[in-house]
Image (tube, rainbow, N blue to C red; front, side):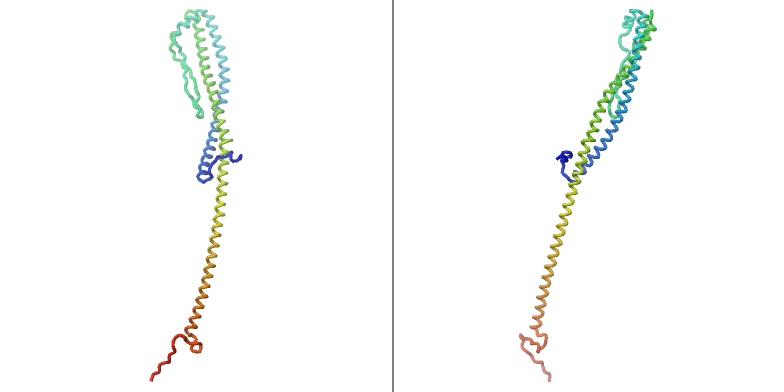
Length: 268
């Protein structure tokens, strides 16, 4: 019962065997490809993990420097520098663009920071009275921090996406390795055993038919031989009877009892 459950329920024929072998070949090839894909995703996953650790360390230092730069700018320009910065900005000059990266067939979102420079000229006059240099330092520090944030966001998103892709790929690999391929292999073995059994049955049947035909031929030959012997006996009896009737042995042998006797003609 367990063997029947661990294989496909198919009719054991040559056509079915070819179809199952084709499916088995596809399953083995798919298992190899998925295994390679899982290995590639795992390598990229570990690389991204190292990059995330490095990016977080760099972001920690960048945010610390940016906060210190903003503190120095406020100390140099006073509280009024905040209003000057807000008045000099109408729209963001830093934008984050999203696009996709392909890793072994898995689409990974990636974010890149771009600087449009729309407010750069207006920001040049910010802090012109005092603290202008500190404001520009704070701006550069926060720009670098935003760039690291966008990179870290890309890495974190790729990390989560690859984690899900690796889990899905490993489930498929395990399904092919532990369920699909063994069932197909057992089905092929079952069909081959059934075809061998059918071939043995057919061979046995042909032997029986051949033996039956041989026996019938021998019986027919014996019957013909007996009939031929009987015919030869009848012919021999007929020949003997004709010899007796025809007087083949001369007058002393009995002569011809049916026809009248004739004397020989005399010539004068």
